[in-house]
Image (cartoon, rainbow, N blue to C red; front, side, top):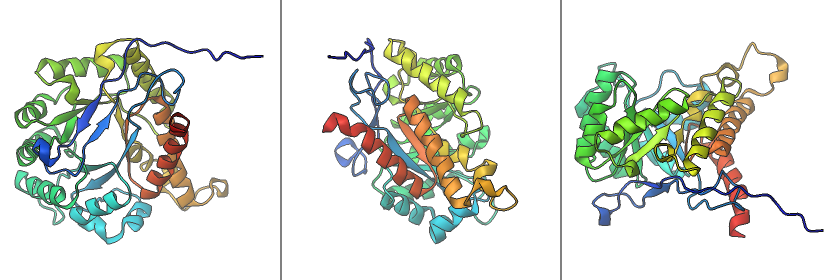
Length: 323
């Protein structure tokens, strides 16, 4: 007896966005990264196409982070004191994109400056051929000051710049427009807020093909169910033709999972929690896996071993389409 597998039929697709520029395109990247383009929900390849696999980025900082788990510090070793060496290590670990977060202060405790941000970005660009994302430290005035300088320094490289949030997006969008970059929007977990910010950024003249949407997620056990639901609804709306929800989605499970107790604490926890390192890696990998299934296109991780695990998962799930 033949069993017919029911299929959903969608009328639209996720928008494709390309980050980075090669020499032929005015930049210096060895290759570009294109995300999005799906015509179906994740890995339901019998219902549509996924022309671009979910991409994996590794987060680095412009100085040794003071709030990272000692497991991460130990894993990265000495390169964590040198953003240039760190970028090279991230590339060698298999990242598709370098995700550079700037700090409020330099390694000697002085306030970060536009000149320092420009120098770091230039050095990273000269060291790694990967597409590059650069975001500010999360303070509106300083974010604007640093990212404007980064936009000038990286002109022609089609950097992904952020973060564009509801109350602080105009300056970063204007800088990205002036120097031909892309922007990362970020909103709390809410479908309407995500959509509204895309509209506001687009109204400034930013083409939709240069906007990547961060709807925010929670870690496993810390709100991931709600984050998953929001992302799934955004993806379904995109496939059903809602133009302002069709941006590829970027999410940061590395940032979310490495700040929760299960990943940060090795002592004083129940024995049933098991080995600390194994638990921490599982937390990041499981969180990333869940959000990939909700429709994420670009996933930012912190541990290189997690990247290997998630890469293997994506390979296995995509394989039926290419077999």
